[in-house]
Length: 123
Image (tube, rainbow, N blue to C red; front, side, top):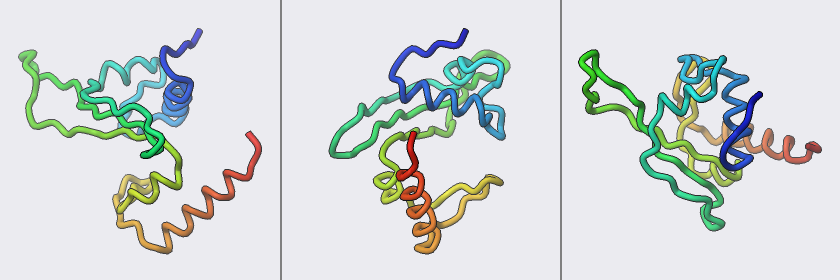
């Protein structure tokens, strides 16, 4: 039986991650809690109506073979919120193959059209 502790949106995001599985296997398909073990929450910015988003700053739980914490690890800011508001904050996107490219005005328009199309669909 699968159950989520926390907000429904967080549960939905974990389920999505479970279904999609990261290309780097950051989320184990057999156990969603692997993501919680792999990443340490450093700071949480609760949902704010002005920002229209919620953010969590995380760092990977990486230890050396000797059991010491490894320094200089990459942090990740995980953000959820209104798609149109989040898109305004973006300057680059990550493509399906993992390449990071600049978010051009044409790409931005394509994404905005997709958001608009999806928002008209019933849940």
